[in-house]
Amino acid sequence: MEISKRADRISPFYVMELLEKARMMELQGHRIIHMEVGEPGFETPGPIKEAAVAALNEGKTFYTHSLGIPELRRAISDDYANSCHVDIPPDRIIVTNGSSGAFTLLFAALLEPGRTLVLSDPGYPCYRNIASLTDCAIQSIRVSAENNYEILPQHLDALPSADLLVVANPSNPTGAVYRPETIAALHRRLSDAGALLIVDEIYSGLTYDVDFSSSACISGDIILVSGFSKAYAMTGWRLGWMVVPPNLVRPIQRLAQNLFIAPPSISQYAALKAFDDKEVLAQMCSLYKNRRDFLIPRLKGLGFVIPRIPDGAFYIYAGIDNFGIDSMAFVERALSEAGVAITPGYDFGEYGASSHVRFSYADKLDNLEEGCDRLEAWLGNV
Image (cartoon, rainbow, N blue to C red; front, side):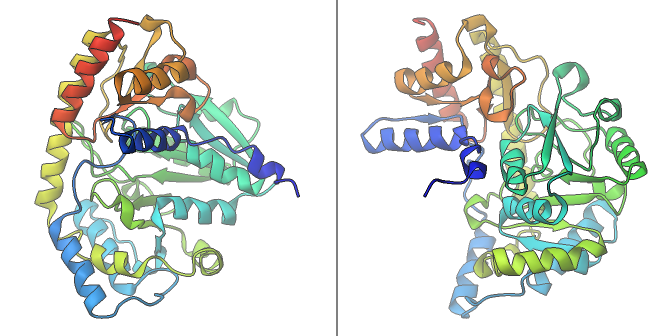
């Protein structure tokens, strides 16, 4: 039996393929510097791990409510109230199997043949690949440093239709932070047309030199997706959440019951401690900023083009025109010849894909320094 056309057209997630190749090289004794994967270079904070151990010892290993344990939904609601003074009822908050689980549920509930999803190019590749399972139409909008890598309302005017728009704030791969007025204008434009806006705020705890406020402050009918993976250093715990309008809760619950049954129980009880110590989160964010501030001038000195300093997340989207090498060949050679793992622009769309790569500065500063030293020696022989 042949595989489905739907499965066949999904592109590889190149950063994961490179990570897997790098791991194989490490098993063979090679030391690899990881500047490809968006994984925090910190262990999960101690109180969260201790809460997980306590939950295990207390036997909290069974299925939970399909929408998440009530205590965690309340804790997320309280955090929105404390951080941006917005009252979000816990019954509008759905705990998910990572933010990827949230998008799987949202796209299944909102997209189908004849509806159109709009995404930025460059942008996070999994939005497109998850949405393709619904057989919807997908429109890409090219964004560049000249407009802060933002989708603007006038971009939507040029499209034949737009039923659902997803923006990441801060963005992957560019690290751009949307201006609140842009989010508000996009929301008005979409609402007037009977369409919806989803804002992915998974990197919302990681911003530098700019004021950031959740899009929850703009309107109650903007769908929000977030999670514990990035700012809380909990990637392997696979726990996210979303905030949805009341009319979406029950449809999404039915899907969640069938697709996931429930979010991971131990992860949920552990995450109850995630909001307790904001100082630890601020310290991690400060270290990311130090890494960014080291890496940008060093990369520029090596010949990479960085037209705009990223304001959030832990990525730098850099041009490689000066080297005259396609980005896929560039990252393959950097890995095999220099032992440095980087992500090609092809992971993030078509616009400028061959001439850009993404660096992650989530790893330790010592490793980033060694990675740059290796690239400098390698580029001298390219």
